[in-house]
Every structure is written in C-alpha cells, then in structure tokens.
Image 1 (cartoon, rainbow, N blue to C red):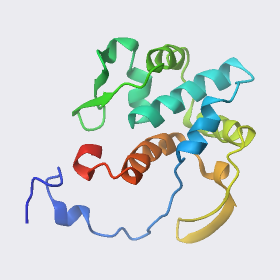
Image 2: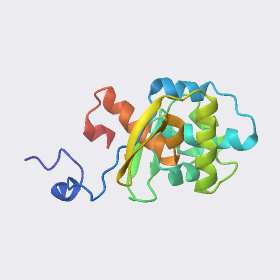
Image 3: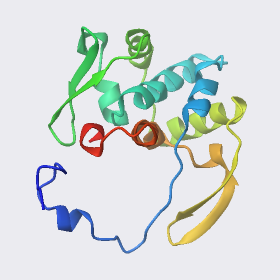
Image 4: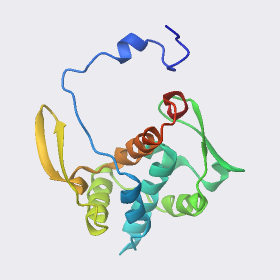
Length: 172
C-alpha cells in the first residue's frame, strides 16, 4: 500500500460507492474537434463555447475558468489555484487558449443558461451519438448533447487523458 500513488487524505473513504451511482458522458477528441470547428451564431454562444473549450483543454471547473485570464498563462503552462480545493494546478497551455480566455471573460451566465446553450451548441455541431446514462437511480436514453453540462468539459479533459494512458497521478 503506497499512499503516495493517489493524492487524497483517506483513500478508503474515497472508494466508497455512493448511494446512487451515476454514469455520465464525456466528449471525445472527435466531439471536441466538432466544437472547435463550430461557428457561434451569437455573442452568447461565442462566450459560452469559449468557456466550455477552456474546461476541455485545462480540466478546470467552470468557476475557475471564469476567474482565469491570459495572465495565468506562463510560458507553455496555465497556472491557477482552484477556488474549491485551494490547490495550484499547472497544465500545458494549448495554442489559442489565451484568446479563448479573453472571450470567456466577456460575460457570466447562470448555470441553467450555460447548460441549455452548450447543449444547443453541441446539437448544432453534430454531437448526436445515441447514449444511455444512469442518473438519479434510473437509466436515461438520449443523444449525447442532451446530457452535456458545464462539468462535461472537466470530465472530458480527464477521460481523454486517461484514454491516452496518462497516469492517474498526473491527471489528478
């Protein structure tokens, strides 16, 4: 048992299954490419898409994206302190991230508005695979875009790294 493998205080507690498990979706690289090629139809779509792509590229929570600026980019990395955990994160900065952050800072939307808009963008971009998820104790069928939310960008970042066999310690 090596406690340094997983960076958490109580590994056993972290592994306890919650009362209501869930299976959520993430966007794969092809889906993210569709969003990168989508042309926003309004300023709101442009801002929300920029915020979402920042999450896909950094793994940051939506609240952290809203606090980031291009000044967080230092050399080849974006460095920020998580509002939730108060821990520093250092992630390789994808080309074009500074411009996305500039656009992302133009406005803030309520979570419900953000989620409806990003789902609509995903639908228009052709992210329409049929999926089955397990949420709130029941199976739900629909299109992938039906289940996208602000947290999907963060989940996509981690899932795509895992699919590339990046060690869990580095992802965390």
